[in-house]
Figure 1 (spheres, helix red, strand yellow):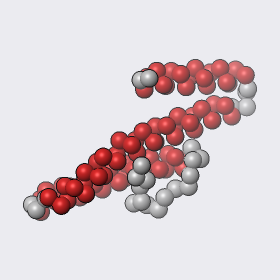
Figure 2 (cartoon, one colour; figure 1 turned 90 degrees about the vertical axis):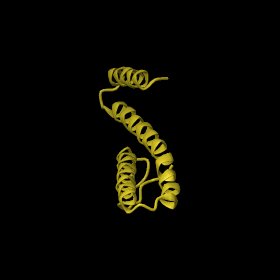
Figure 3 (tube, rainbow, N blue to C red; figure 1 turned 90 degrees about the horizontal axis):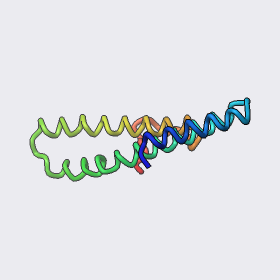
Figure 4 (cartoon, rainbow, N blue to C red; figure 1 turned 180 degrees about the vertical axis):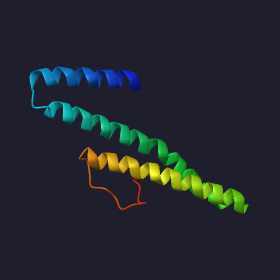
Length: 104
């Protein structure tokens, strides 16, 4: 299933549920589930990058390249922290300490 069809399905589910229940809780649940799915997908996409940094760091001797690698690694960890913040917002688990992005 493509991302676009996933979004359309969730939107359709949300519309159906909101017609049945005016409290809004089904909408909130559908949104939380979508946020969780997206955050997990993001973490899964970041994992190969995180593993690659470990391998590359062993091979890079050039200080300029090492600095670039560090900047890239910092950005990936920030993205992982954002994904974990989304999971916490969606109620899946509590927020990690800053810089402790989920790795999986």
